[in-house]
Length: 372
Image (cartoon, rainbow, N blue to C red; front, side, top):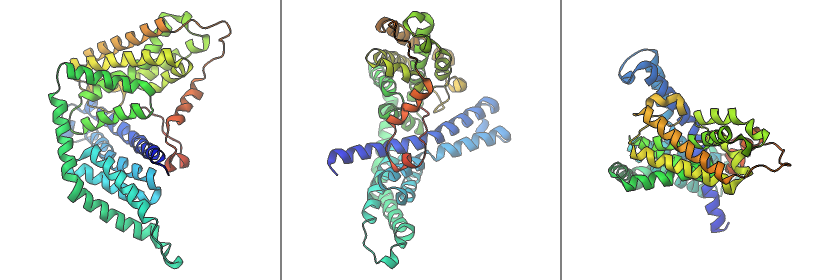
């Protein structure tokens, strides 16, 4: 396998890890949000039903790094690598190396298992390889590496990045917001989007929820912006496109960026720049306003977890209006024969193009929730 092909496979494995991690994040985040919403800000210190719901959400969130490390390793070396990857991710969570440690541990675990799978054994002992030899050796080696080689430096790097994020101000925050917002709207559920989402998750893991607030606005504004454009300039859209208005608004409110994909796919050179511009404006304004969002997903359903919900809504409207205005300016009127509709379901199903061709995606359907 060439270096380029190996790099492509590694990238797909990283996407596999992020894709499998997101449902844990979404479920945990929403349950934590419900706990806060109905149990109060001190729900974690109390007792009762909503305290239990809050605790369940925290358990789901606590599995994030283990799932991330496990499925990165799985993407590299298939099922025998799962146990070592999960252990690496769990150790990363315990020792404070967080997402960076989980990613590094998952990659090392995957390639370690690839080497172990090449061990030559007599036929009578061959069955011991996947159920005994590989699990024991791989967990032992990755555990020792995480504890005695990588754990300390990665935890230090994680802490340094957190401190750097917390000390950023003024123009630096604006640049960060522009880059993060543009990344989220570029491929909407693809690898660039997931990279930006992973960055916000890593920051949240250390207690910095400002990048997550920017993530929310930059992920919600693309479908809302397209929906506003449909409302403000209906003649710019075909009848089928106008029929997608309800889905666009629901997708925007629910932070499901993929609802904008059909429009981007139909006219990428005009729509995608407009989406990126609106999300970049929203991301920059979010940092400037000092917004934080203590939930990893959920859109307006977890709005009360934002430190400044009214400012959040105002910035979301601004970002969506920027997107809508640019779409109206850039998008030409449909021609008379442009009557073929956009099938929202088919186009959302097209997200599989951005999904990794890994063992995981061959065995099961890929979750298409954005991460965003």
